[in-house]
Image 1 (tube, rainbow, N blue to C red):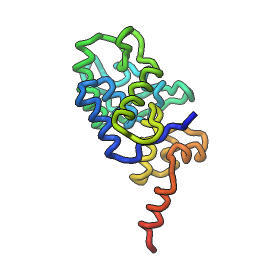
Image 2: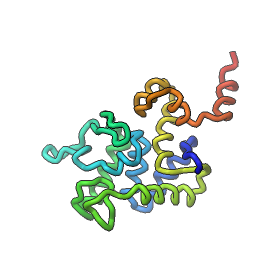
Image 3: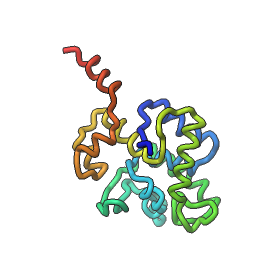
Amino acid sequence: MSTSQPLKNKNDIKKLEKYFFEKKEYRNYLLVVMGLNTALRISDLLQMKWSNVYNHEKKQFYSHIYITEKKTGKHTTILINNATKNALKEYRKYANQKTNSPYIFFSPRKPEQPLSRVQAYRIIQNAADKLGIDGTISCHSLRKTFGYQAWKEGAEPALLMSVFNHSSYHITKRYLCIDQDDKDKLFYKLNL
């Protein structure tokens, strides 16, 4: 079984987002945007309800998502950034017309249930294939992409370890999928 890889090329990230947005598949667009911007596992994303992101009384989105991770049982707080908020707004218009499911990523056949992990995988993997994105791309690639791109922007490894709720730096290092090209760029750029 192949290990999923992050999207290292920012153009591939934009292509994946654009693919769903232009097809007006706003649920899938939001799945990609939230996966890329929250660093959550797909199991946590799919269980997300509107009440996690939207205050119905005040009719506004929260500033943060507060959840307990399914895998680790750890509590985490995630800022809802502008990209995520904009995607949520776009999808909310569409989702409210379709159903009043409590789940953000509801199953089309059973709106009272979330989308399955298998279906989410098919959505991401099929789009990556159609777009010709190289590598083993899956839902987990979205989480890894967050880490890789944050690392490229200068995020400290200890901070990424905390974001991912990893128990060791070794696990976080594996997530980043640092390869020879990344090492070559460092040596080329440094020139002391």
